[in-house]
Image (tube, rainbow, N blue to C red; front, side):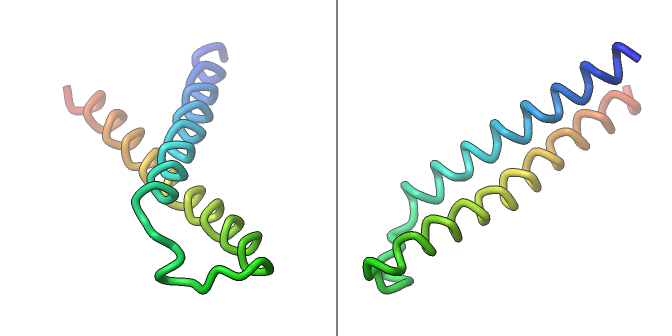
Length: 76
């Protein structure tokens, strides 16, 4: 029971960490004004889009890393 709790907490921390990293990378690497016209009414929508994109990307990377760790533990 305690091991399952620790595992779930580590998954949550991993997901949040990779979501944060993805968000920072999406903000710093891409010039969104070249892709989407930046008008005052589009800025809020653009921030929300980048946030959701960071959630998807961060979750996928985190899930991949956690699966890789789990597979390596079962192999060795």
